[in-house]
Image (cartoon, rainbow, N blue to C red; front, side, top):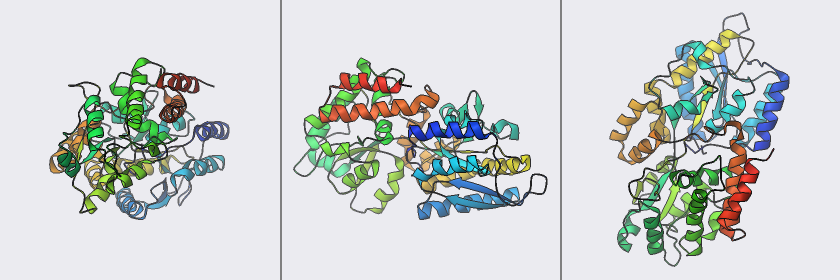
Length: 417
């Protein structure tokens, strides 16, 4: 989600999701632009994503070009900033010029599929075997697969090996150990722990492992289990182990604090590994997100983007786009892309081999096996729940409300019309 490729996922605001449904519902079918008519030979297809970072865009362009060559078409690849993707899609839906191949944050797929703008992939004979159930569910709407993700991501606990060794602190595995370790690692000018607690969906994303691992649920936010999870974050701030500035930190900010030595541990995703590897002063490790009790396995959110084939007036264009989509999700390409972006290949067997060749990714590969999709239970209502969650985090960490009060309000937001 994020976010970066491999970022947990770039998010869209709930109001844009609603607007998307309205526009697509009223405009009906849409057609892709590019060379080739509805009846003539298709020589090119259009592709839209939000991979605007130069190296990232270049890497994707190379793979898309190669897959286009395999399908016998050239690829017209366009990337727009994450915040611009949905507004652009809205405009293209209105003018019936949606691209032939469209990338979406997996949390947005159900909202878009609900409008009828996407085509189910089974009609193209695309192989969906070998994907973990959670990964397939990320691209599924009402029992049909509309999108496939070449790679996925989740979050884990990064820590400074040197700081832990100096303080005589073991890598925390449970919440109690986390609080003790964070307190023991806190020094003048350095906090023990950092998370993204901003008023964004990134904060909700980072909170989910704590909520879910404690038996909490997005369907019902005002429960003791949810309050206990939020209380953990409140306690870390109250006892000085976590900066109050986490209320304004994005995941990128959290990384910067960790890289600068101003926090000893952080929750973040594998997309940060490239930068950490480039910093020769960093001696870091990664472990599963701490759980409430010994012996539990953390339940983390599944991030990543899915590729889809929008409806168009040309079945031939759709078929060519589907061929490129299938190529992107081939075993060799899922490995190549995961290596480039420090993410987890979507195919289970490929991910297992990847974990063996890159031990730093093993924690993420293991966590992905049981990771959940944010929209798995609430579908198109997930953005409301996410808004309720980050609103509760803000209220509780500022002391404006107790975790219980904040989460009662969160539930009201999640169930509002």
